[in-house]
Length: 248
Image (cartoon, rainbow, N blue to C red; front, side, top):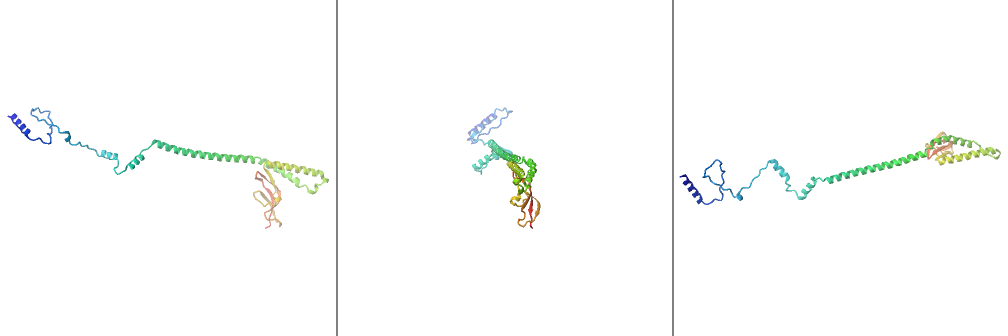
């Protein structure tokens, strides 16, 4: 009786028009062994619902960062990429340029210091040559002074033919003095007498021994030389000792 009822139900279902949606397959139970279990059909592939993926909040934020900004232009995106991108070759080139600038500056400084050292060394060598005879020249000054005094102390009226011996001695001393002064001048030693030209008193070259009034001369004039001065290559090694006029 049960089988007849089931067959009638199936025939009634078969007479009904087919629906658009296919039958949904029911899960088959492994424990069921009934011969009257319904067979289900799989839905058409085109009618399946699209699969939906679920993201976490962290994955969504990362996806938004990776997506380019919709409002930025391609040029702005390109500039941003170039700014963020570091070229190791360009970085190394910049480092080499800075190194070259630093080395060039050091080289220029070294060359300038070397040239300054050369000039200073030349000046020192020249000064050593010019004033190497300074101590020797000072030792000769007393002998030159004594020779000069001997010639000055001979009166002119005594140099006559009756005193031929004195004339010959005076002439020999004068020749000796001239030769000595010429030799000293070759080595840079010169003698000067301020009273011969009536020079003004110069504290850098003269030493005032006394002062006296003289109406026919201006104040500050060196009118008398007690001891002549000497220059060695333009440097005063002994000032002249003079008498100066002072009227006021």
